[in-house]
Length: 176
Length: 176
Image (cartoon, rainbow over all chains, first blue to last red):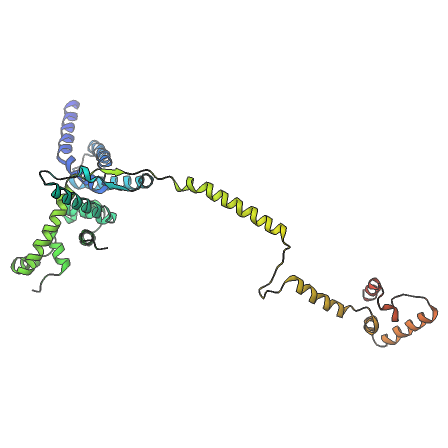
C-alpha cells in the first residue's frame, strides 16, 4: 500500500518534471544568462517541488508555483553571485560558437552579431523588467500568472512589460 | 477611432490591449502595418531569446581592489606621517588667526600694554604707589621718598631710583 502510494507520488513527480523542466530551465537561462547556473538552479527548483509534493496534500497549480520558485531562486543566485561575477571580470558572449545553421558566412556573422546584441540588450534590462519580459512575453504566461509569480499587480506587469519592450528596441537601434 | 499610439501598439503586440484597439488595427492599414512591423521585430527578439543563450566568455579575473590598494595606501600613509613629523620638527610653530596676525606681533603688542600698565619709573611709579593709598596718597609717597632720600635709607625703588632699577618685586609688593 505504502509502496503503491510512493509509486504514485513518484510518477506524479516524474510527470511534473517532464512537463515543466524545459520551461523552467529556459526561464532560469533567461534570468541568469548562464547555462551552467541555470542548470543548477533548475535542479534546486525541482528539489523544492519534490518537498512540496511530499508535504502538501493540497492541489497546487504547479505552473505558477514553479514560476514563482524559479524566479526567487534566480534572484537568490543573482544576489549571491554578484561578487563572484565582479571578481571574474567582464563577460561576453562567445560569438564564434553562436552561429546559425545552414547560413552563409556573411549571414552567420550578421546573425551572430544580431543575437549578441539581443542578448546583451536583454541582460541589461533592470531585473524586474527582465522577469516580466521573460514570463509574460517569452514564456507567454498570462498577466495574472506573471503578477502572482512576481508578487506584483497586473498593472505593474503591464508597465514593466511596456518599458522592457521599449528599452529593448532602443538598445537594438543603438539609442541610449 | 484615432490611430493607435506607440504604447497601445506595443501592448497589442505582446497580447495586451483592448478589443477596440485590436479591431482598429485590423481595419486601419497604417496601424496594421505598424503593428505587423512591431510584432515581427519582437518575434525576432523572442526567437533569439527562446533559444539557448550563447556561452559566456570569462575574462582574466580581476584582482580584488582591497588587496591591490592596501600596499599603496600603507606607503602613502607612512610617507605622509613622516613628512608631517619632520615638518613640525624643523620649523617653529607659528600660529596665525583668521586675519593672518602671528603670535609674534601679538606678543609685542602685549608687551607694550604691559609696559604702559606696569611702568616702574618716574611719575607713573609714584602714581601707581599712591593709587592704593587713596586721597592724599601721592603726597605721602612723595614725602616718604624725600625723607628716604634725606636719610639715605629705604627702598632703592623710590623716586629717581626707580629708573633703570630692578624694582619689579618691590612694585609687586606695593600692589599686592
